[in-house]
Amino acid sequence: MKPITVVSPANIAFIKYWGQRDSKQILPYNDSFSMNLSQCVTTVEMVLSDDPKMQQMEIKLWNESAYRKASESQLKSVEVCYQRVRNYLKTTNQFGFHMRSSNRFPMKAGIASSASFFSALTLALVTAFDAQLDTKELSILARLSGSGSACRSIPDGFVWWYAGKDSKSSYAESIAPPDFWDLVDLVLILNTQQKHVGSSEGHQGADSSPYFEARQTALQSTMTNIKEAFLQKDFTRFGTLLEQEAINFSSILMTQQPPLFYWSDKTIMCMKEVLELRRKGIEAYFTIDAGENLHVICQNKDAELLKKHFENMLEVQTVITNEPCAGAHLV
Ligand code: PMV
Image (cartoon, rainbow, N blue to C red; front, side):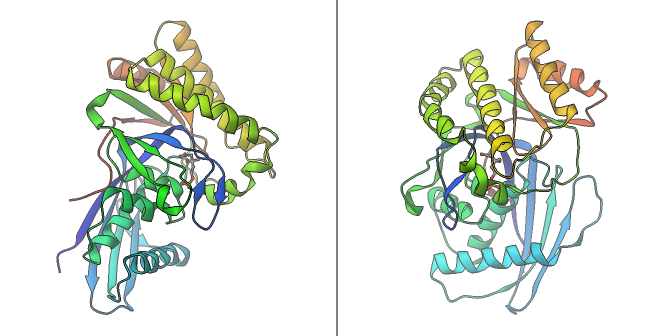
């Protein structure tokens, strides 16, 4: 049988999702807003079998040339997704699979590798069940995978995830196509080791931070302002807001119980470098996920210069240059 191949990007959130008001339905407290990352993609290849008992999975990590057998827990998470998609589609069809997943960027290092993987997996499974779902429904299914931000990797370009009132109204949609604005996200790879505490666990502690409510209140105006700045392509206003949001979000992580410290000395040095570059007139802003590696958001005209600049820093292993791109798609 012909394999089903899906490519899906990770995404970087300008407004973050942190904390779940419903951890079963993966419902966030607030809307979030992101950009798909052209060079941080996962490819999932699935060959179907008539034998439903056949469930095999291999993974190829960043910078590795060969596939290796997936762990029990990785295979289990695929099995859970398979059953969820089956139930959602209300189908009695069954199939086995041999699956291969490869990543073009470090996994579990705060670059949303679970978002790219689970969005790709969701589209591959829906295709395997021969179902047609629109982007909204696909994003809902991707959200339910456990990695909520996977829903933002389904639509194209710049994506808004509506927190919604319930599962049906919590979905992601594109608010602008990839070519709307030539923004670049330079991912500074500082450490490729996998983080100790994953996001699913981290979300559970979010509302224990004494600053959680304050962030939620402030986000209401930040959302309106950032959307306005984005639509007007006002880079200074947009960048200022997204950097402030990254710091506010990180403050929640550091003050929740138990606290999560993902930043390292390298992260802080690179953040300071971004501020220094701005003082010198080169406009860039940083943002960061639940991880050590820093994202530098700039305009395309400055990307090459900034890439070279950061590559020359001892703290930086490598720089991945990302442009806005399409969401999960079959190839
Ligand atoms: O997608 P999850 O459930 O693994 O959560 C990740 C959330 C952050 O990446 C830390 C922030 C975001 O909005 O992308």
